[in-house]
View: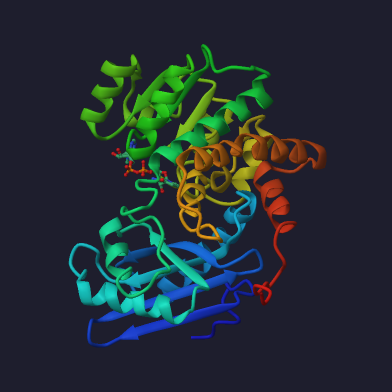
Length: 354
Ligand code: NAD
């Protein structure tokens, strides 16, 4: 399979194909850029149709981590890994231990964490073979969702300030799509700040809880985009911002935790052209990785929740800077974020020798 000509290949410094016949492991680890430090990124387990699909995913995801870490001001580069397999059927201790040995063989250039299809326990199993793991329960930062929600809350504050000129969220209506791990924590923070909530989820129990505990108004899943609100916070699925959504959306701010919110890059420009302010997803949802990064800080300082959450809160100012740059250059915020990130790492970067 030609790697250097692959459309998602972006001068990645290293791509490792990992095979362990005894356990059945087939995995790919992609390190995109190490100029800021070792690559910190999740491991996704997914029943990819073939190796080509897995490669495309890991190349794209690892590049995304370089941008995310740079804008979150982390001393880390960008990397990601994928295990080809069905997380409901193919997990075993031998598989994760083999993966741990491959991570160990990279000598600390890659720090592995949880992603789609993986649990904290799976990463802990890898941790029996390598110290280069993050996001584990013992002595670690635990569930990243509260930190992610805190970052999204700060991002909504920044976007409301920039687009609506409001100093607080008091009385601001926020339509939240998805009341899962992140969405519910976000709703609680919004409610405490005086925002008015319109919510939806496929899970009726989650909706009932938001109505009962937070006084939210519930709408059907297909009515959330057209809900009367100033802010739309996608916290469920990716690709929710497409042509139809932009046509129907009532909100003037789009700011939520979901990954890959834009169906295509051109929808960043379409949001801008329609007068809406978009908080780029990989900037606003970086709270989880910022929190995890505080476990593995160079120098071995122990995890400190207060310091980690203070770092997460900087997402507010980073977004204000991105909004200002986008206005000045007359470009979509999604493009302004990429450009700012690119000033913070060296192209085709390998970490400098210590
Ligand atoms: P989750 O699985 O806990 O919650 C997702 C919720 O969305 C579920 O309650 C689900 O029922 C609901 N949902 C699914 N489809 C829906 C639909 N069509 N309409 C309404 N609701 C729907 O996930 P999470 O951890 O809260 O993450 C939410 C999003 O944020 C995901 O896109 C995730 O990739 C992203 N994200 C999460 C984190 C984190 O720390 N958990 C970090 C970065 C990004």
